Structure formats: structure tokens, C-alpha cells
Length: 174
View 1 (cartoon, rainbow, N blue to C red):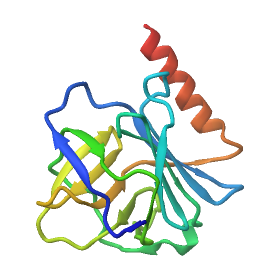
View 2: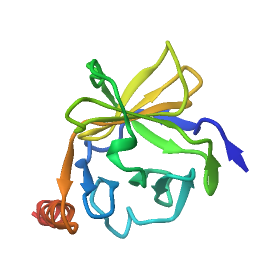
View 3: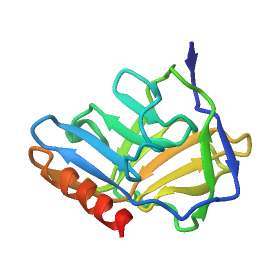
């Protein structure tokens, strides 16, 4: 089954915004985005994917990881690309599981430290935090129109993402 635009359930937030950030794996030329800290409650259950993009979800339909297997040099540079300014907290749950997406479009800024993954054009949308540096743009039909990763660090041999994960485990245990 193929879906053009992922469907979401948007409701009042039930927990604080989780940490999240992008890590561009230099040797693999792939973007890994950690969303929250992996725990037994927030562990892999299912996915939604296209040829280049994989969105991993936990049992409750929460996004927990993004993997983009497209080199930065193939992202479209948009000089004026800026992330949304008005972003609300929300509890976002993906409704589609184990489905294939049509390939989204990938836009970045000159520094290539922000990416907009666009699933559909929309003039009407709301922006919600999925994590501190991960934002979902959602249209009035609760369809995902874009994912924004607003902080991407270059990472060699997975050192930065490993450090991020270990810091998160230490912070959550305190």
C-alpha cells in the first residue's frame, strides 16, 4: 500500500517535548535523526518509508527515528529557507504503519544544517514539535506536509549521535 501523505492524530500534549537532533553521517552520506531517548516504552515497532526515507515508529505511533539515505549534495538548496517561527507542542501519532510513501522533496539552507522534507505543498498548516529540533507541519486534514530538522551536526563514525544518546540516558536517569 502506498500513501502520498502520512496521516496523523494530533492531540493535546501529554509529556514535555523530547530531545531530538539530526546527525549527518559523513562516511555513509546519510542523515540520522534521533527523536527522544530510546527506552523500552519508546522502541521500534513499525515504519513508513520511501526509497530514500524511513520513519521509524514505536508501538504507540510516535516517531522515534528518521533515516534519510540521500547525500547532502543532492538536497535542493533554498537560500531563503527558514524553519517555522510559530511552533506548538502536541501529541502526534502516526496512523499509517508499514506503508510506502511517495518520495518527498528535500530542501536545505546554504549551510546545510537545516532540512525540510516536504511531503505535500500546503498554504494552510500548523507546526508542532515532535522533538526539540524536529518539527512537523500538518495541514487542516491532519496530514503531514513537511518534517523540519532544524539542527544537523556532521558526524564521523557515529560519534556525535552516540554521545547524544548517552547524554539522554544519563539525563533521564537523574
